[in-house]
Amino acid sequence: MNKTTFLPQDFQIIDWSSLEPFIIDLDKMPLNSEDELNLFLAFKTELEMAIDEEQAWRYIRCNVDTRNEEAKNAFEFFIDEIDPNVESWFNKLNKKLIDSPAFSIFEKKHIIPARLLKKSIEIFREENLPIFAEMQKQEQEFGAIISEIKVEIKDKEYTLQQAAELLKENDRTFREFVFRSISEKRVEKSETLNNLLSELLRKRYNVAINAGYKNFRDYQHFNLGRFDYTVDDIYSFHDAIASEVNPVIDDIMLNRKESLKVDKLKPWDLQVDVEGKEPLRPFPTTEVLAQKAIGCFKVVDPDFAEIFSVLDKEKLLDLESRFGKAPGGFNYPLYKSNRSFIFMNATGSMSDFETLMHEGGHAFHAHYYNHWPLIDYKNIPSEVAELASMSMELISMEHWDNVLTNSAELKRAKRKQLEDSLIVLAWIAAVDKFQHWLYKNPEHTHHERNLAWTNIYKEYSSPTIDWEGVEESFVFAWQRQLHIFEMPFYYIEYGFAQLGAFAIWRNYRQNPKNTLEKYKNMLKLGYSRSLPELYKEAGIEFSFTTEYIAKLMRFVRDELNKL
Image (cartoon, rainbow, N blue to C red; front, top):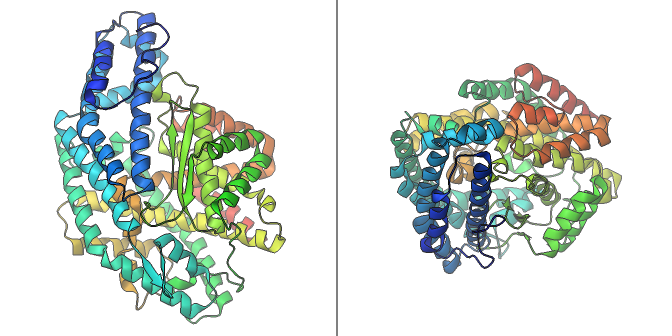
């Protein structure tokens, strides 16, 4: 061990025995002075980043190819054999720090990390470690199940993402066939997914009880570090979305129904262009998609283009949809390498570009906060992480003329982006409210679960949409949301962030240079401030009151009217 680095240059994590000596060395380090504290924290962060990056790559390899047994076994080995020992030992190191003479220095110097450290110790239970290992493996089953679904249309097989793209076609009879084909395949897996969730719910309930909580909802609220708002605040958010956003969405749906000149607006009418124009598919290949993204980022800020170009050159982008690939999209920060890995399922649509703008926002965030010396400052709360990504969607929208040169197509793409941003707010509220119900009623049956979802979804789904004849698609719609399976309760943050993104976009429209400067300053701060302080640094409020949401909805409605 020397004074600048802790790990040898050729350090590799193979099994627990390759890690244990370094953790024991950390445990032996004295913690009596500020110098000793700083050295301990530097070495601890170096080791944490190496562990985090190893787990990241094992997770990524599982997702890019769910059929790869070697990758699956490597990930499961990490979860079973390495992670529980890491968690147990790091809890011991946390206690060592909190009981040391140097803790008063740490608490004064590192306010947010100290808050997180206390939370971690309070919630840790040794008996939960094997449960966490089981859960992490089971959570991967969702992606494996979805990735293998094949939808056959006109003698050709499509992934779910590719098939969904066909719902933008103008032929209504064809769209209905596609919708029913997708629905049929999803319903075939509905009981399998219900059973999977039931198993996860039981394990999560046990985790909460072991930690001294009445239910997993209360446990997870604390576990996710929601220090700056309460469960009651979340309920208020649900209500505010229903009162302020739902009416705007219903206007959008009524306008769609009238424009399409249909007696009933059906679920297969929601993606098609209302003027009968062909779907926007400006990206024949993912290579074109990546290059167009770089061009757009360059107009927003040359630094963004440079960061993203490095990811492209180093093959840290996996963008296309294919069989055997997990659903969804994510940006996984690689702290040790100061890089990010971007994963998504592109099908050539304009929405792929929006997704890439979103994940790019995450990648820029990771790049800018990686300067912090402790990993605690890099573990960004989702409310801020999603603010970075959702704001980038709307900021970039001001420069989509570099992607869509036809003014009519540009206008159409912008309108779709804004409409989708509003519609997702209602969906987020429904999914989050449903999760509250799930975990407050742990003994429920599958029938009661589906009934609860149906009643909640009715609150947030526009009554203009007619689901008659495809009721099962409505009842099992919650199974589309991977967060329910893989990241429980991590979803409401998207709602808070979407509101913040609207506010940042409003500021950007008025003063681009100043807004971008504030945005980048917020990115650089990492998790060094509370949520309200970070939002303030970005030039906006951390608020989800009815009055605040109503004000933002007036702004967005006005912008929609201009399009």
